[in-house]
Image (cartoon, rainbow, N blue to C red; front, side, top):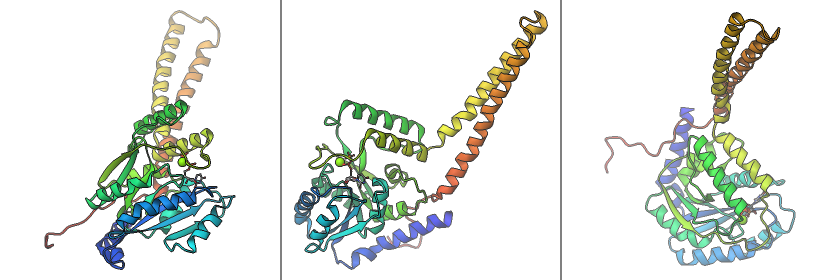
Length: 340
Ligand code: UDP
Ligand code: MG
């Protein structure tokens, strides 16, 4: 595992030393990773807005857009491919069916070649005008630039309450907190992207992975506008399952709870059983068989829970092992002989 972590860091450092940027002279490549699912109407306005944003930056930055068609059943693919004929900056990754946004995002990140990578929604709810500000923070040295929604005024009250509840529960349980109201829209340096790509887990909760990686992080804020075209593909049921995925893949706390619950219950049962036993010995038998039956039930109930808790401890460890996350992530290594 340690060697894997080293490999991750080595690779990204080599890339950082100008290997990627060298081929394009001074221009840096920014990859926009855009998962799309039944978004035929949104492609055109999205491309227009991106063009407007990057036109004044053309001296320093060039961009590519990696669309990931997540099994769309409408003319999304056609809309993208027809624009590809005249726009060499576009790249299309077609998935064989709908795999969900998280998987689509991973596919896009795998195909992005940029020095920085920005996952964003196609519906313009992640305003492209924020990108120049993100790039400024990146130039100043930030490896991750989060875009935080300044409020949730345009959400329904139910969405607001559930979202707040989720962040509270998640951050209390998980070992690594995630910033509230920061979605997938963020800038990731190539070094970070390479680490994220090496993480071994299959159930992906990208938001948590992006935070787990660490590195210097900056933040910009924005007002999230309403969707321009189409409707959201996220129902409450889907969001609920997404929240469960997030919590269970980021913490083994729900398994651990049973060790303590079981131990406390077993202890309480033992104390209660002792009192019943003493009472029966001193006062005598009230109902024949009551003392022995209740003592057995309490004892075995407590022992069962405790045993489940112990199993949970091992399952939690197996889970951590199979994810094969690197033990550590290097930011850089320096030796005394280096000239500064
Ligand atoms: N999306 C996707 N696969 C899905 C659902 C959504 O690729 O199964 C894409 C969608 O096309 C959009 C982005 O993910 O570009 C965000 O989706 P949506 O706007 O529905 O989510 P919301 O903004 O409501 O969170
Ligand atoms: Mg949206």
